[in-house]
Length: 263
Length: 269
Image (tube, rainbow over all chains, first blue to last red; front, top):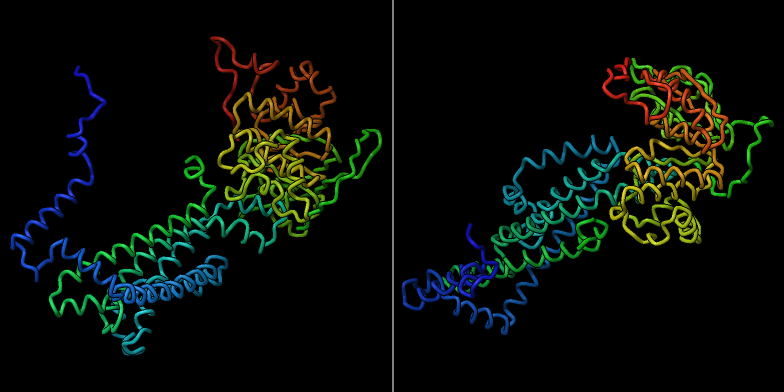
């Protein structure tokens, strides 16, 4: 039997660090760009990207366009999530509602939302409306499906118990069914946020005159790979922020969960 | 379903003086499809009486309890149950997203609900867990919370659906003592569904055996609680007999004979 050392030397620590490979990639990229191995019109160096990022922030170009994009996501999400919640409540809380709503939602599910873009352009033109509509339409389904399943999956024994203590239908919905379905709703919301950002990217390819997509399209025309990479970073940041927001909501709303209670 | 939140007048029943039963079922039947679950059942429970209901799985115990709890429709049959009743289920069935005290006063209204929850939880020894989340409670604590939730309603009828079956033996013993103490101070009529013959004998005034939707045996225990060992020897064998189990006379300590053929015959249903 060998003695297993519990201490790791500094060298081992560096090798095992999860930061190592990304940093190596960045350094290789920087080196290749500076030595001319990667021409600037193919991919700008990380240092150039950072400089461009700083410049775009100072000039106000990035904040103003980011605000436009965030507004589209926010409005689209607000509409899509509200509609999804309302439809899920109708379908989840009554048999007639389920018979009326669920078939439509299942039909809607079979149509890729992206494929609706041409139709939305015909209907709504190329302004803000089709972009918001695409995001709203795409985020509706994950919210609907998860909340609906959550409502249907609420523990029947808890409903029985609450019923035996004299809770009426309305009180049952407020105190038992909706809190029971909340984890599912938050899961649906998480999906919806991810999809919203994907749809934003797609929607902004439609002749945008402002927003992150507009920046990307312009940069493409001028082969400004540094600006394209900056926008990619911002998209990634949007996704991370969305995830962070949901995590905060979950920590507060699901404080009763044992995993979070013990932590 | 309405909830009677006014305090119950506590009165000790006098066996000599006949009183209106709080539960009265006459020829009550219930069927699901072709299966007759409850078959023309008659049942009276007097105010403050502690009744234990024994029976196999599928004997109709749960259906009967659901009827008394008002969870199932009675379809216009002759069923009388008090307006104020409460159930303690085998699994505590606390809402995990409500703190313990809010579970206790679930559905109650008024400004003093927290004080009432505090008092009820104090009675079951859980004052310190008022603001805990239910999922952090132990099995025994959860069941005590369920008891507090039932008692805070001052029920005339307390329904216990195998409330101790999922607890370990030591916790169960403590819960038995707690239930007796609470029953003596609040004096609701109790119907306790159980599989456990010894538990039934230890706690109840009267033991019923349900089989195939009918009451096939009824034993009244007149001996004082705590002094029932003499009664048990024969009563236990008789009750087990009604449940289709052949057992020796005596307590559970003598139930399994050494080196002999199994004393407990196969159950015929």
